[in-house]
Image (cartoon, rainbow, N blue to C red; front, top):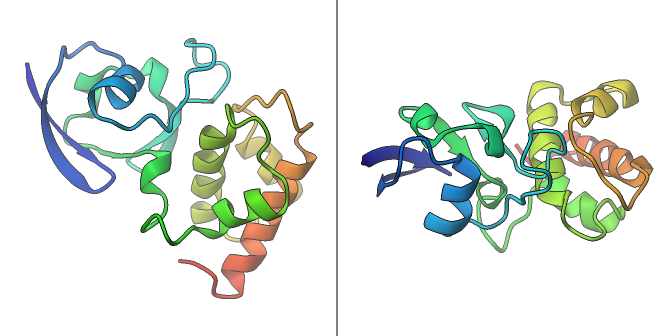
Length: 159
C-alpha cells in the first residue's frame, strides 16, 4: 500500500504494509538505521523518535499511524552532518554516550526536553529520560550532557 510520510522534513511516498512497525520501516525500508531496537516492547527507549515533536517509541507505532504527521529521527536532529546540535556535541564532550545502543533514543528524548524546557532542572532531565534505559553510564554523564547542552544553547550555540 502506498503511504505518504514526512520524515526529517522530507515528504516520501513508500509502498509498505500499513501495520508495519515504524521502527522496521525506518531501519530496513527507508535507510534510517539510527533508531535502535532494544526490547521491541516500548520499555527501553532505544527507538525513540519524535512524532509531531513528541517523543514516542517507534517499535510501538504502526506506519499507518504516521500519515499526515511529522517524523523526526536521530538522523534528522542536526541540520547537517558537519553541524551537530548542542545535545549531540555534549554527549561527546561530557561522555554521555558509551556503547551507542541507547544514544539515539537518549538524544531524541533530550532534544525534545530542551525544546520544551530550555533550562531544565536535574529532576526534569531525569523525568524526561526515564523511558530510556542505559546499561553503561549510570545516567550521571547523560544528565550532565543535557545540562551542558542547555547551557550551550543559552549561550547561542543552537536554536
